Image (cartoon, rainbow, N blue to C red; front, top):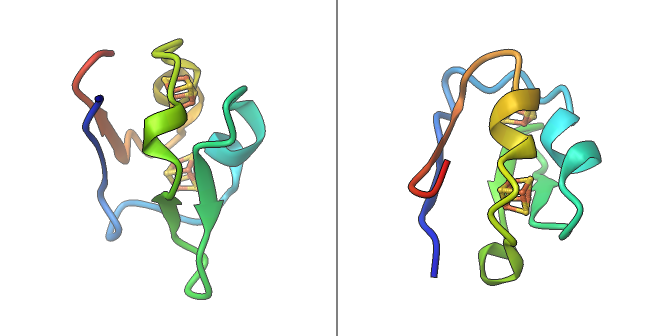
Amino acid sequence: MVSIKIDVDACIGCGSCVDVCPAGVYELNDDDKSEAVNMDDCIECCACIEGCPQSAISHDSC
Ligand code: SF4
Ligand code: SF4
């Protein structure tokens, strides 16, 4: 299983990670911060890392 961490202070809630992830790993919470709610579904494509304008995502496979 992968480990994904979001820097909530850096996250601006742009939704890019939600849009680019082919596995539906991310959702925006009520505070407009990204959460990796379906981490088990990750296929390790690294699109989220490339798509985050804030470099707010840490992913142990990317
Ligand atoms: S590595 Fe790919 S599948 Fe995994 S969370 Fe990022 S965008 Fe989604
Ligand atoms: S792409 Fe980055 S800044 Fe945008 S919602 Fe996702 S984690 Fe936050």
